[in-house]
Amino acid sequence: MTTQSISTSQARRIALAAQGFLDPPHTPPTMRTFQRTLDRTGVLQVDSVNVLQRAHYMPLYSRMGPYDTGLLRRAAERRPRRVVEYWAHVQALMPVELWPHMRFRMEKYRARRGKWAILDEDPALEASLLAEIRTRGAATARDLDEGLPRSKEHWGWNWSTTRRVLDYLYTVGELAIAGRNAQFEVLYDLPERVIPAEVLARPTPTPGESHLELVRRAARSHGIATTRCLQDYYRMHIDEVRPAIGALVESGELLPVAIEGWKRPGYLHRDARLPRRVPARALLSPFDPVVWERERAERLFGFHYRIEIYTPAHKRVHGYYVLPFLLGEHIVARVDLKADRRTRTLVVKGAFAEPGAPAHTGEELGAELTGLAGWLGLDSVVVEPRGDLAARLAV
Image (cartoon, rainbow, N blue to C red; front, side, top):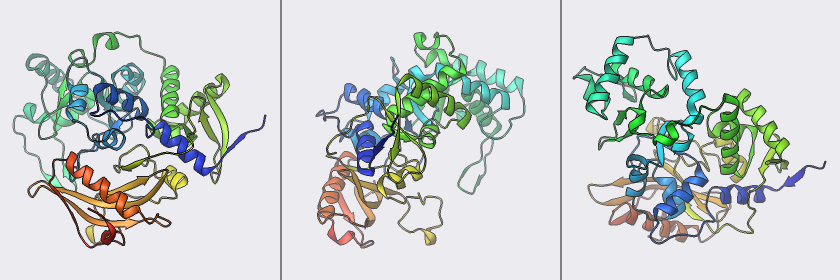
Protein backbone atom coordinates (compact mmCIF):
# COMPACT_ATOMS: atom_id res chain seq x y z
CA MET A 1 0.00 0.00 0.00
CA THR A 2 1.33 3.45 -0.95
CA THR A 3 1.88 5.80 1.98
CA GLN A 4 0.18 9.16 1.52
CA SER A 5 2.53 12.15 1.37
CA ILE A 6 1.59 15.29 3.31
CA SER A 7 3.23 18.65 2.64
CA THR A 8 4.38 20.86 5.50
CA SER A 9 1.61 23.36 4.72
CA GLN A 10 -1.02 20.62 4.75
CA ALA A 11 0.34 19.30 8.07
CA ARG A 12 0.15 22.80 9.59
CA ARG A 13 -3.43 23.28 8.49
CA ILE A 14 -4.46 19.85 9.72
CA ALA A 15 -2.83 20.50 13.11
CA LEU A 16 -4.43 23.92 13.54
CA ALA A 17 -7.85 22.65 12.50
CA ALA A 18 -7.57 19.81 15.04
CA GLN A 19 -6.74 22.35 17.75
CA GLY A 20 -9.90 24.36 17.09
CA PHE A 21 -8.67 27.29 15.03
CA LEU A 22 -11.46 26.75 12.49
CA ASP A 23 -14.30 26.70 15.00
CA PRO A 24 -16.84 29.50 14.50
CA PRO A 25 -16.87 31.99 17.38
CA HIS A 26 -19.74 32.49 19.80
CA THR A 27 -20.28 36.04 21.03
CA PRO A 28 -20.02 35.89 23.92
CA PRO A 29 -18.44 32.45 24.37
CA THR A 30 -20.67 30.08 26.35
CA MET A 31 -20.14 26.84 28.25
CA ARG A 32 -20.90 25.08 24.98
CA THR A 33 -18.04 27.02 23.35
CA PHE A 34 -15.79 26.04 26.25
CA GLN A 35 -16.71 22.36 25.93
CA ARG A 36 -16.07 22.39 22.19
CA THR A 37 -12.67 23.99 22.73
CA LEU A 38 -11.77 21.53 25.50
CA ASP A 39 -12.73 18.67 23.20
CA ARG A 40 -10.11 19.97 20.75
CA THR A 41 -7.24 20.66 23.15
CA GLY A 42 -7.91 17.69 25.45
CA VAL A 43 -5.94 19.19 28.34
CA LEU A 44 -5.05 22.66 29.62
CA GLN A 45 -1.59 22.86 31.17
CA VAL A 46 -1.51 24.58 34.58
CA ASP A 47 1.42 26.80 35.52
CA SER A 48 1.91 29.25 38.36
CA VAL A 49 3.54 32.07 36.34
CA ASN A 50 1.15 35.04 36.32
CA VAL A 51 3.16 37.77 34.60
CA LEU A 52 0.44 37.94 31.93
CA GLN A 53 -2.35 35.42 32.63
CA ARG A 54 -2.34 31.93 34.14
CA ALA A 55 -1.36 29.36 31.52
CA HIS A 56 -4.62 27.37 31.55
CA TYR A 57 -6.71 30.41 30.62
CA MET A 58 -4.70 31.40 27.55
CA PRO A 59 -5.37 28.51 25.09
CA LEU A 60 -9.08 29.12 25.54
CA TYR A 61 -8.62 32.82 24.73
CA SER A 62 -6.48 32.00 21.69
CA ARG A 63 -9.32 29.92 20.25
CA MET A 64 -12.50 31.48 21.65
CA GLY A 65 -11.53 35.14 21.86
CA PRO A 66 -12.54 37.30 24.86
CA TYR A 67 -14.43 35.10 27.32
CA ASP A 68 -15.49 35.18 30.93
CA THR A 69 -12.81 33.27 32.84
CA GLY A 70 -15.58 32.25 35.22
CA LEU A 71 -16.49 29.62 32.61
CA LEU A 72 -13.31 27.71 33.39
CA ARG A 73 -13.69 28.15 37.14
CA ARG A 74 -17.24 26.82 36.95
CA ALA A 75 -16.10 23.86 34.87
CA ALA A 76 -13.27 23.08 37.32
CA GLU A 77 -14.83 23.86 40.69
CA ARG A 78 -18.62 23.53 40.55
CA ARG A 79 -20.91 20.59 40.06
CA PRO A 80 -21.21 18.94 37.65
CA ARG A 81 -17.46 19.29 37.18
CA ARG A 82 -16.30 19.06 33.60
CA VAL A 83 -12.55 19.21 34.27
CA VAL A 84 -10.23 18.24 37.10
CA GLU A 85 -6.52 18.79 37.72
CA TYR A 86 -4.23 15.83 37.41
CA TRP A 87 -0.77 14.96 36.12
CA ALA A 88 -2.19 14.40 32.63
CA HIS A 89 0.37 16.21 30.45
CA VAL A 90 2.25 17.74 33.30
CA GLN A 91 0.01 19.44 35.87
CA ALA A 92 -3.10 20.03 33.78
CA LEU A 93 -6.85 20.35 33.73
CA MET A 94 -8.30 17.32 31.98
CA PRO A 95 -11.87 16.16 31.28
CA VAL A 96 -13.25 14.40 34.35
CA GLU A 97 -14.09 11.31 32.30
CA LEU A 98 -10.35 10.65 32.01
CA TRP A 99 -10.09 9.93 35.76
CA PRO A 100 -10.53 6.14 35.36
CA HIS A 101 -7.99 6.16 32.53
CA MET A 102 -5.43 7.72 34.85
CA ARG A 103 -5.66 4.90 37.38
CA PHE A 104 -2.84 2.99 35.70
CA ARG A 105 -0.67 6.07 36.27
CA MET A 106 -1.87 6.37 39.86
CA GLU A 107 -0.76 2.79 40.50
CA LYS A 108 2.68 3.48 39.00
CA TYR A 109 3.09 6.45 41.34
CA ARG A 110 1.97 4.31 44.26
CA ALA A 111 4.51 1.62 43.43
CA ARG A 112 7.37 4.10 43.30
CA ARG A 113 6.07 6.35 46.09
CA GLY A 114 5.69 9.58 44.14
CA LYS A 115 6.12 11.32 40.78
CA TRP A 116 9.83 12.08 41.05
CA ALA A 117 11.73 11.27 44.22
CA ILE A 118 10.84 8.36 46.45
CA LEU A 119 8.73 9.54 49.38
CA ASP A 120 9.46 7.90 52.71
CA GLU A 121 6.48 5.98 54.02
CA ASP A 122 4.59 7.74 56.80
CA PRO A 123 1.29 5.87 57.24
CA ALA A 124 0.37 7.86 60.35
CA LEU A 125 0.70 11.23 58.58
CA GLU A 126 -1.15 9.97 55.51
CA ALA A 127 -4.04 8.69 57.64
CA SER A 128 -4.08 11.88 59.70
CA LEU A 129 -4.26 14.13 56.63
CA LEU A 130 -7.00 12.06 55.03
CA ALA A 131 -9.02 12.12 58.26
CA GLU A 132 -8.57 15.87 58.66
CA ILE A 133 -9.71 16.57 55.09
CA ARG A 134 -12.63 14.19 55.49
CA THR A 135 -13.76 16.22 58.51
CA ARG A 136 -13.00 19.78 57.48
CA GLY A 137 -13.44 19.61 53.69
CA ALA A 138 -11.18 20.98 50.99
CA ALA A 139 -7.94 22.39 52.37
CA THR A 140 -4.53 23.62 51.27
CA ALA A 141 -1.19 22.32 52.47
CA ARG A 142 -0.79 25.59 54.36
CA ASP A 143 -4.11 25.00 56.15
CA LEU A 144 -2.86 21.60 57.28
CA ASP A 145 0.75 22.50 57.92
CA GLU A 146 0.20 24.30 61.24
CA GLY A 147 2.82 26.89 60.45
CA LEU A 148 5.78 24.65 59.74
CA PRO A 149 8.61 26.88 58.40
CA ARG A 150 9.53 26.77 54.74
CA SER A 151 12.65 28.23 53.20
CA LYS A 152 12.87 29.77 49.76
CA GLU A 153 15.78 28.69 47.60
CA HIS A 154 16.50 28.89 43.90
CA TRP A 155 13.25 29.24 41.91
CA GLY A 156 10.50 28.17 44.29
CA TRP A 157 9.24 27.11 47.66
CA ASN A 158 10.66 24.04 49.32
CA TRP A 159 7.79 21.71 50.07
CA SER A 160 7.01 20.78 53.63
CA THR A 161 6.54 17.10 54.53
CA THR A 162 2.79 17.74 54.63
CA ARG A 163 2.86 19.18 51.12
CA ARG A 164 4.85 16.24 49.78
CA VAL A 165 2.49 13.71 51.34
CA LEU A 166 -0.57 15.57 50.03
CA ASP A 167 0.94 15.57 46.54
CA TYR A 168 1.59 11.85 46.85
CA LEU A 169 -1.99 11.17 47.98
CA TYR A 170 -3.28 13.20 45.04
CA THR A 171 -1.09 11.46 42.47
CA VAL A 172 -2.25 8.01 43.67
CA GLY A 173 -5.90 9.06 43.61
CA GLU A 174 -6.65 9.06 47.33
CA LEU A 175 -7.17 12.81 47.12
CA ALA A 176 -8.31 15.02 44.26
CA ILE A 177 -7.90 18.72 43.54
CA ALA A 178 -11.10 20.62 44.27
CA GLY A 179 -9.74 23.93 42.96
CA ARG A 180 -7.28 26.63 43.92
CA ASN A 181 -7.57 29.60 46.26
CA ALA A 182 -6.81 33.25 45.50
CA GLN A 183 -3.09 32.60 46.16
CA PHE A 184 -3.17 29.78 43.59
CA GLU A 185 -2.65 27.16 46.30
CA VAL A 186 -4.10 23.71 45.63
CA LEU A 187 -7.25 22.76 47.54
CA TYR A 188 -7.22 19.03 48.26
CA ASP A 189 -10.39 17.06 48.91
CA LEU A 190 -11.68 13.50 48.81
CA PRO A 191 -12.29 12.20 45.27
CA GLU A 192 -15.96 11.47 46.04
CA ARG A 193 -16.49 15.18 46.71
CA VAL A 194 -14.75 16.23 43.48
CA ILE A 195 -15.25 13.59 40.77
CA PRO A 196 -18.86 12.98 39.63
CA ALA A 197 -20.17 9.79 41.22
CA GLU A 198 -20.91 8.09 37.92
CA VAL A 199 -17.34 8.70 36.72
CA LEU A 200 -15.82 7.52 40.00
CA ALA A 201 -17.91 4.33 39.86
CA ARG A 202 -16.76 3.32 36.40
CA PRO A 203 -14.74 0.09 36.20
CA THR A 204 -10.99 0.54 36.05
CA PRO A 205 -9.80 -0.02 32.47
CA THR A 206 -6.82 -2.25 31.87
CA PRO A 207 -3.57 -0.33 31.36
CA GLY A 208 -3.69 -1.26 27.67
CA GLU A 209 -7.20 0.14 27.31
CA SER A 210 -6.13 3.39 28.94
CA HIS A 211 -3.02 3.66 26.78
CA LEU A 212 -5.22 3.21 23.70
CA GLU A 213 -7.67 5.89 24.81
CA LEU A 214 -4.95 8.43 25.60
CA VAL A 215 -3.17 7.88 22.30
CA ARG A 216 -6.52 8.13 20.49
CA ARG A 217 -7.23 11.47 22.18
CA ALA A 218 -3.73 12.73 21.46
CA ALA A 219 -4.17 11.81 17.80
CA ARG A 220 -7.46 13.69 17.60
CA SER A 221 -5.97 16.76 19.26
CA HIS A 222 -2.93 16.73 16.97
CA GLY A 223 -4.69 15.74 13.76
CA ILE A 224 -1.36 14.64 12.36
CA ALA A 225 1.56 13.46 14.48
CA THR A 226 4.64 11.32 14.89
CA THR A 227 5.08 8.72 17.61
CA ARG A 228 7.02 11.32 19.60
CA CYS A 229 4.15 13.82 19.34
CA LEU A 230 1.62 11.22 20.49
CA GLN A 231 3.86 10.13 23.35
CA ASP A 232 4.32 13.68 24.61
CA TYR A 233 0.68 14.77 24.67
CA TYR A 234 -0.16 12.77 27.80
CA ARG A 235 3.51 12.21 28.76
CA MET A 236 3.43 8.48 28.21
CA HIS A 237 6.21 5.91 28.03
CA ILE A 238 7.17 4.82 24.53
CA ASP A 239 6.38 1.20 25.44
CA GLU A 240 2.81 2.29 26.23
CA VAL A 241 2.43 4.23 23.00
CA ARG A 242 3.75 1.88 20.32
CA PRO A 243 1.19 -0.95 20.86
CA ALA A 244 -1.63 1.61 20.97
CA ILE A 245 -0.50 3.15 17.67
CA GLY A 246 -0.33 -0.31 16.13
CA ALA A 247 -3.88 -1.08 17.23
CA LEU A 248 -5.21 2.25 15.93
CA VAL A 249 -3.47 1.73 12.58
CA GLU A 250 -4.91 -1.77 12.33
CA SER A 251 -8.43 -0.48 13.05
CA GLY A 252 -8.05 2.28 10.47
CA GLU A 253 -8.34 5.12 12.99
CA LEU A 254 -4.76 6.20 12.27
CA LEU A 255 -3.43 6.35 8.72
CA PRO A 256 0.36 6.12 8.18
CA VAL A 257 1.65 9.12 6.23
CA ALA A 258 4.95 10.65 5.19
CA ILE A 259 5.26 14.29 6.24
CA GLU A 260 7.50 16.58 4.22
CA GLY A 261 10.76 17.29 6.03
CA TRP A 262 10.09 14.81 8.88
CA LYS A 263 12.36 11.80 9.17
CA ARG A 264 10.00 9.96 11.50
CA PRO A 265 6.84 8.21 10.20
CA GLY A 266 3.64 10.22 10.61
CA TYR A 267 0.08 9.29 11.47
CA LEU A 268 -3.06 11.07 10.29
CA HIS A 269 -6.26 10.72 12.29
CA ARG A 270 -9.03 9.51 9.99
CA ASP A 271 -11.36 12.33 11.11
CA ALA A 272 -8.78 15.08 10.69
CA ARG A 273 -9.79 18.03 8.54
CA LEU A 274 -7.58 19.56 5.85
CA PRO A 275 -8.88 23.10 5.31
CA ARG A 276 -7.87 25.18 2.32
CA ARG A 277 -6.88 27.99 4.67
CA VAL A 278 -6.78 28.75 8.39
CA PRO A 279 -8.10 32.25 9.24
CA ALA A 280 -6.28 32.41 12.59
CA ARG A 281 -4.94 35.43 14.44
CA ALA A 282 -3.86 34.46 17.92
CA LEU A 283 -1.22 34.88 20.58
CA LEU A 284 -0.15 31.47 21.89
CA SER A 285 0.87 30.79 25.47
CA PRO A 286 4.28 29.16 25.94
CA PHE A 287 2.22 26.22 27.28
CA ASP A 288 -0.19 26.00 24.34
CA PRO A 289 -0.50 22.51 22.81
CA VAL A 290 0.40 23.96 19.41
CA VAL A 291 3.93 24.80 20.60
CA TRP A 292 4.58 22.92 23.85
CA GLU A 293 6.46 20.13 22.03
CA ARG A 294 9.28 22.29 20.70
CA GLU A 295 10.55 19.90 18.01
CA ARG A 296 7.03 19.63 16.58
CA ALA A 297 6.71 23.43 16.51
CA GLU A 298 10.01 23.67 14.67
CA ARG A 299 9.02 21.05 12.09
CA LEU A 300 5.54 22.45 11.48
CA PHE A 301 6.24 26.17 11.58
CA GLY A 302 10.00 26.53 11.16
CA PHE A 303 9.82 28.16 14.59
CA HIS A 304 12.66 27.66 17.06
CA TYR A 305 11.19 28.30 20.50
CA ARG A 306 12.63 28.06 23.98
CA ILE A 307 10.97 29.54 27.05
CA GLU A 308 13.42 31.77 28.91
CA ILE A 309 11.73 32.16 32.29
CA TYR A 310 14.50 30.22 34.00
CA THR A 311 17.29 31.82 31.95
CA PRO A 312 19.22 34.61 33.74
CA ALA A 313 18.05 37.99 32.43
CA HIS A 314 21.34 38.89 30.77
CA LYS A 315 21.29 35.66 28.75
CA ARG A 316 17.72 35.95 27.41
CA VAL A 317 17.37 36.39 23.66
CA HIS A 318 13.74 37.48 23.43
CA GLY A 319 12.52 37.97 26.98
CA TYR A 320 10.96 36.51 30.11
CA TYR A 321 7.45 35.56 28.96
CA VAL A 322 7.39 35.34 25.18
CA LEU A 323 4.29 34.43 23.19
CA PRO A 324 4.35 33.28 19.56
CA PHE A 325 1.96 35.14 17.25
CA LEU A 326 -0.02 32.93 14.87
CA LEU A 327 -1.34 34.58 11.71
CA GLY A 328 -3.10 32.33 9.26
CA GLU A 329 -1.16 29.07 9.24
CA HIS A 330 2.19 30.67 10.12
CA ILE A 331 3.89 31.84 13.30
CA VAL A 332 5.05 35.26 12.13
CA ALA A 333 6.29 36.99 15.30
CA ARG A 334 6.92 36.68 19.02
CA VAL A 335 6.31 39.19 21.81
CA ASP A 336 7.53 39.49 25.39
CA LEU A 337 4.49 40.60 27.40
CA LYS A 338 3.72 41.72 30.92
CA ALA A 339 0.41 42.75 32.45
CA ASP A 340 1.16 45.70 34.75
CA ARG A 341 -1.95 45.52 36.88
CA ARG A 342 -1.00 48.49 39.02
CA THR A 343 -1.00 50.87 36.05
CA ARG A 344 -3.60 48.82 34.12
CA THR A 345 -1.20 48.53 31.20
CA LEU A 346 -0.20 45.72 28.86
CA VAL A 347 3.54 46.21 28.43
CA VAL A 348 5.18 44.94 25.26
CA LYS A 349 8.75 44.53 26.44
CA GLY A 350 9.92 43.25 23.07
CA ALA A 351 8.44 42.47 19.65
CA PHE A 352 10.26 40.40 17.04
CA ALA A 353 9.26 39.44 13.50
CA GLU A 354 10.02 35.97 12.19
CA PRO A 355 11.82 35.58 8.85
CA GLY A 356 9.37 36.04 6.01
CA ALA A 357 6.72 37.74 8.15
CA PRO A 358 4.25 39.63 5.92
CA ALA A 359 4.26 43.42 5.77
CA HIS A 360 0.99 43.71 7.69
CA THR A 361 2.27 41.69 10.69
CA GLY A 362 2.67 44.82 12.86
CA GLU A 363 -0.89 45.94 12.17
CA GLU A 364 -2.38 42.50 12.86
CA LEU A 365 -0.31 41.98 15.99
CA GLY A 366 -1.21 45.44 17.25
CA ALA A 367 -4.91 44.66 16.90
CA GLU A 368 -4.44 41.38 18.74
CA LEU A 369 -2.57 43.08 21.57
CA THR A 370 -5.33 45.66 21.94
CA GLY A 371 -7.90 42.87 22.17
CA LEU A 372 -5.81 40.97 24.72
CA ALA A 373 -5.45 44.07 26.89
CA GLY A 374 -9.21 44.52 26.89
CA TRP A 375 -9.80 40.91 27.90
CA LEU A 376 -7.30 41.26 30.75
CA GLY A 377 -9.05 44.40 32.01
CA LEU A 378 -6.14 46.67 31.10
CA ASP A 379 -6.68 50.18 29.74
CA SER A 380 -3.75 50.61 27.37
CA VAL A 381 -0.85 49.00 25.54
CA VAL A 382 2.67 50.40 25.94
CA VAL A 383 5.37 49.26 23.53
CA GLU A 384 8.98 49.42 24.64
CA PRO A 385 11.54 49.99 21.85
CA ARG A 386 13.03 46.50 21.80
CA GLY A 387 12.91 44.21 18.78
CA ASP A 388 12.63 44.84 15.06
CA LEU A 389 8.83 44.81 15.14
CA ALA A 390 8.29 47.22 18.04
CA ALA A 391 8.17 50.38 15.92
CA ARG A 392 5.63 48.83 13.54
CA LEU A 393 3.00 47.84 16.10
CA ALA A 394 -0.26 49.68 15.51
CA VAL A 395 -1.67 49.96 19.03
